[in-house]
Every structure is written in structure tokens, then in C-alpha cells.
Length: 189
Image 1: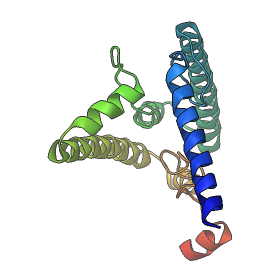
Image 2: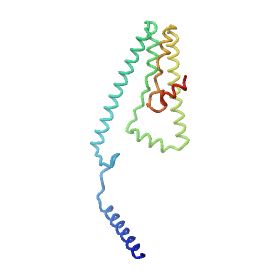
Image 3: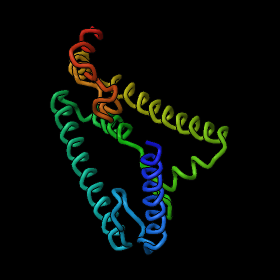
Image 4: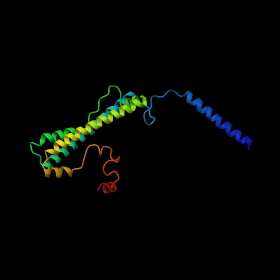
């Protein structure tokens, strides 16, 4: 029985040495992508161009949906010419903020830079971002209050019956309205 164990141990050691020798003799591979496939600079550039095209297409579709919603709301409210400037300001305040364009660093580079910061500086940046979000929300609230003030009582009823947009449905299934189905609707009433 003891010799069998020794033979098995020797066989495993031989396989281990052969594997190590094989690994050292294989040529250096090209940089690998997400799923272990070699990626060339051209493929990386093509992938980046494809992502930018998809992003532009998504933004165009989102702009179309927002314009359709605004037109429907305008029609539902039956706005007068005097109410139009407040409505335009309300719509403008609801548009998402433009992200700053970073030169030479992508999302991964930004994350790496952020991760390299000491913990207190990371927290300072997080607090600063939250302050910027709060400032944008306060600007939206001011525009909403200005618009709401020019509405008639009938228009206010129609406006109040509309679902709130802007933030809640951003990541579907992650805490937006109806996240827990009928249970959340029952809890809210």
C-alpha cells in the first residue's frame, strides 16, 4: 500500500514539473480581452467606436422619448402662451447633466485613479459629487415650483396625476417605483 502512494505522488510531481516546463516554453501571448481572447489595437478601437455609436443611438432615442413625453404633457395641460416659458425652464432643469469629457482616460482609468486615492480623499470626492447632485435636484425643484405656480387648479390636478420621472426609473429593478411589484404600491397607499 505504501508503494502505491509513492507511485501516485511521483506521478503527480512529474505532471506538475511537465506543466511548469510547458508554461515556461510557451511564447508570450498578445494582451487578452474580457473573455481570454487576444485583442489587437484595431479590435479595441473598433469596439470603442461601436460603443460610442450605441451610446449616441441610445441618447437619440432617449431625446425622442423625452420630447414625446413633453408634447403629451403640454397637450394634457393645455398650456397657454404665458405658461410656456415656465414649462420650458421646467423641462430644461430636468435634463440630465452632461458628463465632463476626460482626455485620455476612460471609465477604467477614472476608477483606477479614484481607487489609488487615500480613503479621506475618496470620501471627499464622494461628498462633492453628492453636493453636485443635491444642487441639481434643488434647481429642478425651483423650476418645478415656478412652473407649478403658474398652473390653474385644473392643470395642477392633471400635473399631479402624472408619474414623477427623473431618477426613479434610472436603473430598472433597482429601487425604482414598482420595484417590489404590487406590494410597494400597497405600501405607498
